[in-house]
Image 1 (cartoon, one colour):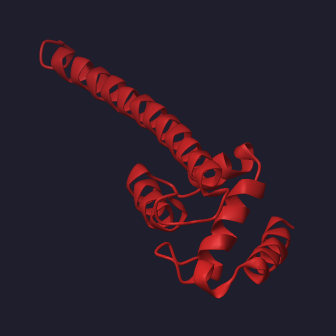
Image 2 (tube, rainbow, N blue to C red; image 1 turned 135 degrees about the vertical axis):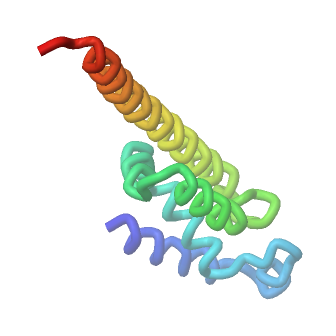
Length: 129
């Protein structure tokens, strides 16, 4: 639904531009306009969940960098580029923070498991049967 709305809005926006506006230094391509409108139209919670689905922080950072090159207001002349970039940045930051918290939880669990195995192993040589 969001994609269909962004497609129609992108087509409408590009149809209103003059040739000089399209060939400016920011080069408003269909892809750039579509991405800005897609991020603008997408609710924050949906963006966050989408970022979390990427799995790990390295993939999330790579995805953010690739999209940031297209959506950043310095690279994209669309009037909503700044808002779309902020939404993308916020969703990425929140996703990375939640991934970091989960990674710390997993690491603590591993350390606790390792220390409990060490405690049992240390007691075994002194035990008499």
